[in-house]
Amino acid sequence: MSNSAVSLLRTQYKEAAGWLEGTMGGVTSAVAQYAPGGKATPIAGHIAHILSGLDFFVVGQVAGQAPLIASTFAGKTGISEPPPQGDSTEWMNTVTIDAEAIQAYSKAVFAAVDDYLSTLNDSDLAREIELPFGKFSVGWVFNIMLMNTYCHTGEISTIKGLQGLKGYPM
Image 1 (cartoon, rainbow, N blue to C red):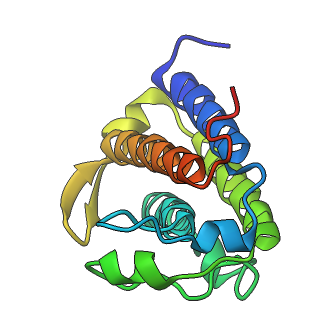
Image 2: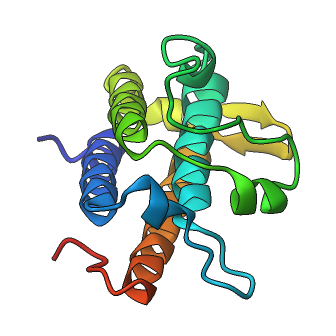
């Protein structure tokens, strides 16, 4: 594989997808709805946030394609309702998931991200894009969404542990 920034991003997203998928192993819809208490949100909110964010921001905003949630996966994401614009705190606490359906959506979202990354070269990462919360480079969007994926995967692992389940796949 080449030493380009785009190649590195592709590798990182493939690893993040595998890590998320492994962490979600054994999560049933009931496990996903467990409310850990305090300010922590259920697994369902975390996985729905990760995937809808990648779908809306990377597939929709950066790639300029119809998000999967509104096109090929409309009504089939396994997410009970799409995220609201703006503050999603309440939504993350109340959204429900179908554990089987969301696995297929997850694979499709990460495949769409990789498909788009495969069309880019390093100079494309400097392109600026207008998002609802400001103007950012394409590279910044990929980096922040990757960080978001890993951070929420950690929360999913912890919430599984609170239920006596194995969190991370390793």
